[in-house]
Length: 250
Image (cartoon, rainbow, N blue to C red; front, side, top):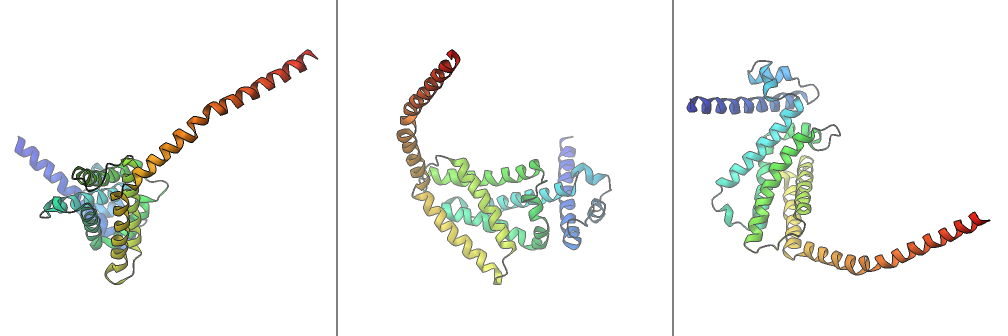
């Protein structure tokens, strides 16, 4: 019974991947708008009704593609010999470069769908959230490993750092899609230089310094003045009350 269930789950995963790959072919040929669920199902060799059991819309198939690529990237990172010994910057760079390498065979498809996934006003929040969650899990692991060995200091606002990493990822893919340089050398240069700067920024503890400075200014220049502003407000209310009482008496 257990073996039957295992085979069933494996077959479902295989069918899901077949649908995703079929969508890559159809959307690459026809564009996102002109591609149909019927044609994707036909190309994947599944029944027309079956496809909706896996993906309710074309958009959800596209989200599925980006999810699969992130999962594939993680599997590649795990297969790299000694990846855990890479520096913080090397791990980040390898992760991002691996993503771009996986996108490369499907570059035209990614061009057709990139804005739909990351910039469309009507985008499915759950679809993007799922992709973002996978991405941030990798980033979180890389940050925590670097903090544990003392390569970078603890991040006072890790959520902000992770959000910046996500925005950087989206921007990097967008830049790569518009890069016309030979073998995408401009993208490689951008990745090298920007990560150099970002990692130097983190290693120097600049985010923590900014936080400490902001905290100092808030404590000493805002909180310390609350009593002053309170006194001014009380005085204004007292003057207004006296004015109203005088007018009432008249």
